[in-house]
Length: 250
Image (cartoon, rainbow, N blue to C red):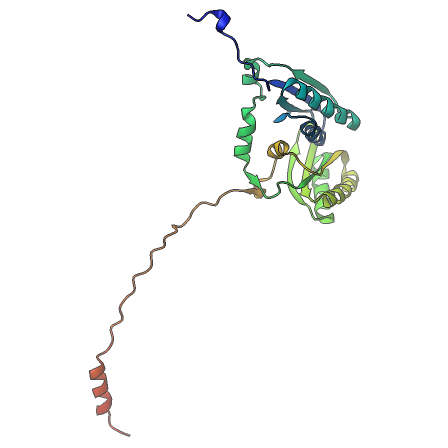
C-alpha cells in the first residue's frame, strides 16, 4: 500500500484558470481577444449560459491569467458589459473533469472545426435583440462593403450576433451600415471590430459549414481502365482491286 504522504497531486505550472462573464457575445469575443494579447494564456473556450450571458475561459500560469483577466475586465467595463470575473489558482482535477475548462478541449475544437477560407481576416460582430434585425443588418453589411457573412450566434434573451469577415476598412464600413439598419428594424445591442484575430480565438469562433474546407470524397479511382482497342477487319486488297478492274466502263 502506498503511503498517503506520497499520493501527491501533480500540479502543472499552467493550471491557473481565468473566467470573465459579459451579457453580450461581441463583448465576450472582444474581451477574449484582449486577454490573449495581454498575456501568455490559452483560450479554452466560451460558455453560453442563457439570458444573454457568456463566459470566456482562459488558462496559463497564475501571473499571466491575472493579467489577462484584468485586461479583459478593463475592456468589458469600458463597454459597460462586465458581469463577473474569477481567477482560480491550481484548480482541482475534479473541477477540470466536470466543467468545460480542460486544456485538451482546445485541441478537440481545432480538429473538429477544420480550416476556413475566411481565416486570418478581420472580423466584425453586430448584435441585435431580435432575429429580424440581425438578418436585416447582415443584408445591409453585405451590400455596403466587400465582406463575407461567416456565421451567426444566439445567446438567449433574444440576442443574435452576425459575424462578417474582410479587410479592416471593409469591415468597419459594413458594421456602420449594419448599425443603421438594425436600429431601423429593431434594437441594436452591441458591436465589435477586431482587426487581427488571435489563433486561439480563431479556432473557437463559429463558422458556417459553407466556409469550411473539407476534402471531397474520392468518387472514382485514379486509375481508369482504358477500353481495349478493337481491331477493325480490313477487306482483302487484292479482291478489291480485281472487282474494280471488272467494273464495265460507261
